[in-house]
Length: 212
Image 1 (cartoon, rainbow, N blue to C red):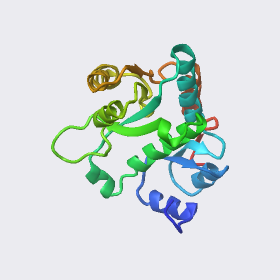
Image 2 (tube, helix red, strand yellow):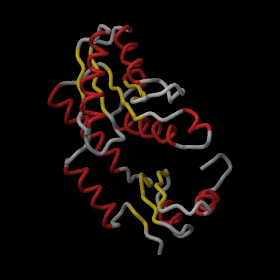
Image 3 (cartoon, one colour):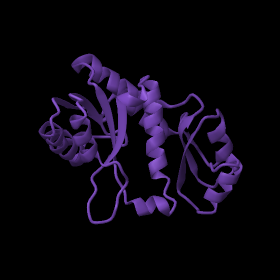
């Protein structure tokens, strides 16, 4: 929602684009239900009031990792990058990533100096969203950060990008730059809280509002 714009204003703008669905994260309880009455598509609840099950699941996965492996000095939240030009044209992706990082850090009670957001997987000559993950890792190591926990909050399941680029290639970047310990936190994969959340979305119980 833009400054000075109501939720209904936003709904009307989005509805005019004829989307298949709209994903909403809003601080007010009932916002998704209200929005679902104004648009002609399904509305997915990404966090309505206190409903933030995705953030809850991500936070739980980090806490489980900390209990098992200990806590690193720094948590890096790495998202897949996109060309910066896309954002200039109106793509909300960067802000969505920032908001996810903010909510997750708040849930984990992390001070600003204890976590970073960065973007991975850039290619080609165009400028992509910054800061870049590999450069962020080099910078952390050169600042004297000896250990990092790294996760990809936007990935539902591990894949070649997370298991190779993030868990192996970027580990080498950090260690070769002077870092001491690099630990990749697995994606949510088949965690019970993740599967339950996906089931609720698929079945329309609590997380997705129909067109009715």
